[in-house]
Image 1 (tube, rainbow, N blue to C red):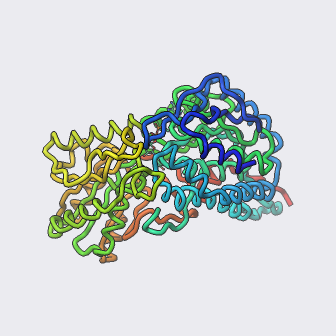
Image 2: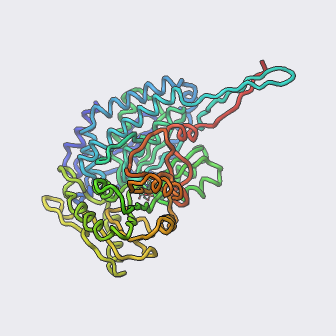
Image 3: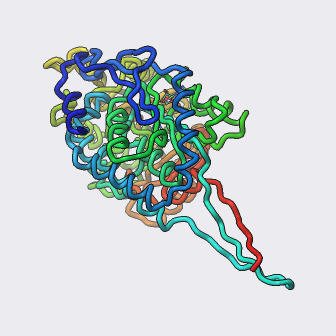
Length: 508
Ligand code: NAD
């Protein structure tokens, strides 16, 4: 059955597949209205998706609220078994789901095969398995009158609203990655911990990339998740997303997306004192010291351009120590020009930008750089043939000569555009690297351990990678400082976020 669902999506020519549906109480429910989802590589509509309404969100929340009454009393073992079955099913169809992720998002199919889908499987497995052992604390209290045993019970919070962006669609919904090889590198990162902790959920994937999330709902149904435990409404943020945030029966919101939207969700959620976790934008610095390992240059370039630079953790400001600046820029431009770019369904390294709106935004920043006197070494808009003439392609773009105050140095561009600038001392570069409103991640490149650790120590970021990028271990906290987010996700942090700790004290 699962194969049939996936194969039908793969085989259907553009706009020939039946419109997608919402998923409520284990039923695939026709929405009140639909909208088009565009294939970013061709610039043409390829499938109709629900344009979810507030009343559809209300139905999904009602189903989740009802299911919570029994799901919260299932054992962690039972939840874990079901999540492992989802992981197995996704794994079996890794390559086929990768085809859909690539068509929906614009990312190269090779990347979806080795990064997005395997990491999604890993998210389900790791949360499913580790939750069995993760949270338990007890302590004996000795009083003159006798002893009490205290233990902590982690109660599920209730109905969780999970809102995800378009850049790593399935991966983020499920989220997590362990150790990622430097040459490769999201609903799983949210779904897995929310469910294993005993919550029921309503997902709202990005309206730009909903197809694989819809496929995932088939997996939940097929492996036997009880009705109402997992629900999904596809639609726009301002309607479906906003209703999920405003719904009084949704007690927790996990959001990954832009700082603008996340900040509004935080304000709206605060009115009902909801638990809110925000993973938001970044303007990540990379610091390259004179004695960096030359062999790392390819990884430094990947840190800017992987997934078309559409990863919140991509490096977009590179600070290079002055004595090596010119040589570094020359080598870096050569690396940038090695990336193959084209139809994401073929074996290329860079696919299409996710949408026309986003494509225009990235182009606008390249224009700003030109107007401000920046030196564009390579990149810009790229025309691709064979049916992709109307697609949204931008080649790796390297810019020098801009001041730190330039919008290109302060705003999140979220595309394959990097600004490189020289620095003299570590004190200076730390201050400049910390000078944006964001604080998601940073990289430091040096052969000197003291230099690495001293710099890492001073940087205001949720993650600092030294001589590597995107290597992640689930048990480590993940999140951002300043405008990049609040809260941390990861094995222990997510399980804490998706539960309410309750101390039970028993007089012995
Ligand atoms: P976005 O903020 O526009 O949308 C994210 C999600 O929020 C979508 O599902 C959207 O429909 C929904 N939404 C929009 N308005 C809403 C509202 N008023 N109420 C509720 N939901 C609403 O972000 P995007 O363009 O999809 O994704 C790109 C952004 O995501 C970038 O800023 C990137 O840095 C960020 N991101 C951050 C991380 C991280 O871990 N920090 C990871 C990936 C992406």
